[in-house]
Image 1 (cartoon, helix red, strand yellow):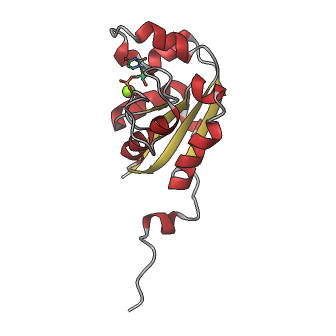
Image 2: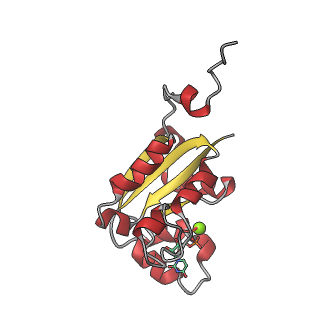
Image 3: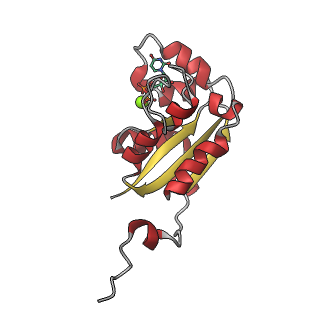
Length: 157
Ligand code: UDP
Ligand code: MG
């Protein structure tokens, strides 16, 4: 099923010049970028994104971190994009994340782990709504869709 997910390159990803690296991984995997905004979040906006963690001990520090410098907010679209982006991000703590993942390759921190990605279709829908209106999400076709999903190529008999 075609899904959309909210990906955020966090302040450490921007400050560490990793925007291109992170976008490049998603782009090369074949996902479709359908919206993007470069913003410095308010503490309120950061708190809305991480509302599920409101009661956690790390919440306050997390909100301060996320609103401390600009972030790149993006919506990516593809079949199965939520699970695939989560796998490509790696485990939450950079020091545990597998090599080959974004966090495993570039982060060694609990908090400064470079990237946020929605973890379910329900949270994706809610999180996208926080930052993008429907008209800011662009509907278009990528011309390589046949080759990505392999469906339009009928084998020669
Ligand atoms: N985080 C933190 N300390 C912790 C756990 C999480 O600062 O002990 C931060 C970290 O930046 C993480 C974010 O809070 O990405 C949200 O945590 P979650 O468990 O949802 O991890 P994620 O979904 O990002 O892997
Ligand atoms: Mg999470």
